[in-house]
Length: 216
Image (cartoon, rainbow, N blue to C red; front, side, top):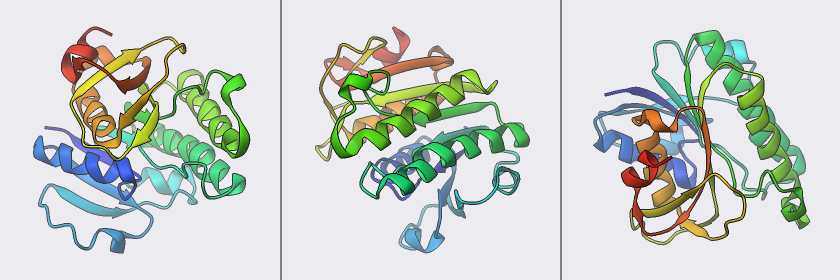
């Protein structure tokens, strides 16, 4: 059992993730800007926790003391304008990493995006989103000493999860993935040492999640 802070717990992936973690008997701090967003949640393993990404790292760190791992699942999805995207997907992510180091939390999993390493695929209104994800990933890998996992899912869908995925460490893949399966992969990654210090792309595939992670 782990004590895990999920930042962005009210997001489409975050909502699924906190329930999966609870079902695994992990204790979850569901980090949201407004805890009222989770008033309909009645689960003794999930604690709604006010977590405002606009605050300074020193303040955010106070919410992280005593936890085992952090998942950064917050994100604008590129739909809230470039300014908000940079403040949440980039600066919010970096401040969360800095806060983790202040609080002494080592494990940090971030939900990124496929193609963040390929600027030729940054097109249209999504360019600020990809840029934010790219530099947040780079900060995590190169400017921290955190024990990281970077999950880069393909196009997200609301289909029912299958539990069957394809994980790749190269960028020459394309495809989609159900949000439910993203959440399952993140949850499994937290309990699998094969995923530490790793970056991988995630799309729907043919392998059970645990088998795919163990082959990384």
